[in-house]
Image (cartoon, rainbow, N blue to C red):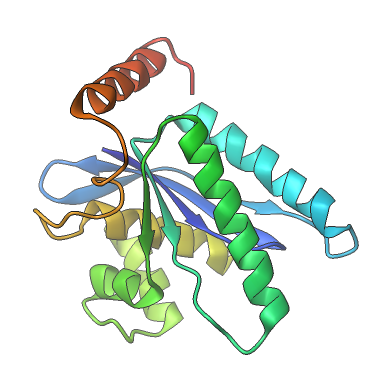
Length: 189
């Protein structure tokens, strides 16, 4: 399974792609950050992030997109931008018939470290260890995107998440999987 993790943000949107490997392990495929300047208008910033998400989805052809579930904070403008970018990621995935899974920060922390209240640095160190990286991915948004992808790979077996409840018939899911496999075989990433 290939998971594209998205840590939504309007200034920095972390994007990470991870493949599952035998033995409940994960392998880094790619990681990066889509950026937009606060000097630009919100519509232009969203367009830039949207274009970058499209590039990643087309290049890496994930089986699922894992996005951090937006939660209320004190700063309403931060929550709005984060929610808008999460929406862009959901739409980009839906256009390609790629299922979307939403994970809360505490779910991600628990999956990666075993502790739902782990500190950010502990999560980043575990991401580097899990993926056999020499150093922690930077900025933090990149590491967070990888943590989201790992969380989705390691969710408990048999748990139905949004990706598995995606509104497609079994035949549509099979067709989408075959289409993704064919795109990978042709090198369309």
